[in-house]
Length: 189
Image (cartoon, rainbow, N blue to C red; front, top):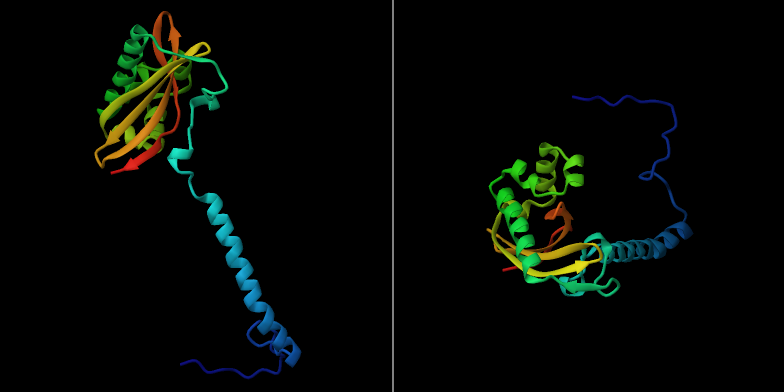
């Protein structure tokens, strides 16, 4: 049982015990709803800017290159087949969780920057859909300046389709993975 102690000290003013004049009460009654409305409108505006752009309006090429601004040309069949083997090989290794093998498909520059453990951690956190890939579809390939790009569509176990753009570079006459742009959810079927 708590027994309140009486004191002679003044009670400090807090928001719960402040006395407003009649005009203060009127002003508070008028402006409080306005302030609340402004706060709601601002939070709605911030929420609108955080909404993702629908995929139909968004194209995310790797390295921020756009086919409209850089001259591109389609891959010839021999190059497309060689690149397809590398992309599919890396994706199959990732699906088996063999990250050491998956890293072997990368360019020497990429491999020099990543240990197998860091590469695995990056794939598990940033590209988990690649681990769960049920189907891999090579959509389109093209040459861009001195490298090639391959658009890849991955369908996961949960039937999510994700789009990726693989950047490919030549190293001693062999195509290697130079990078991959983040996945974009195309559909959730």
